[in-house]
Length: 135
Image (cartoon, rainbow, N blue to C red; front, side, top):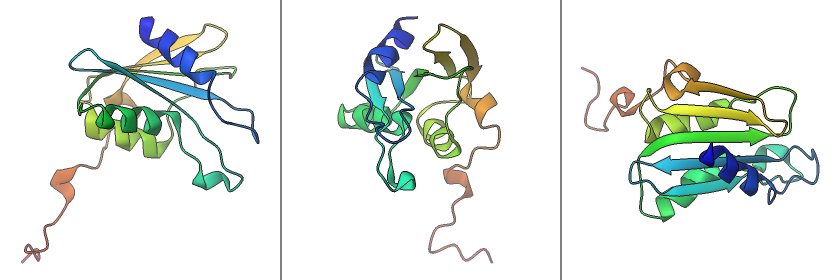
């Protein structure tokens, strides 16, 4: 549960003055490095940033692009899964088999995978290049 602990420590630095719903995320890369992120709220709620997105951004800045494991923690009655946007972001950097541990600050955990969270992920194979008009 080292990754959950890293997410727990990160969560303490979350910026959630409006909802007080603090979230921490930690990613372990294929190379073994750990990157963390927290949610950052804005008074215009949709303009905030999720913890998972912050961890992914830190990972990319650190020169890594493949996620091997994920942990997300929040102070909630039950483990909270990533939002739809973060599920898609995780799917871009992690295979469907990658383990995701969802945890609460009370010690409850739920293990799942990226593929279970987003069974119909949108990928680069769905994109049409400008030169491909579909004809």
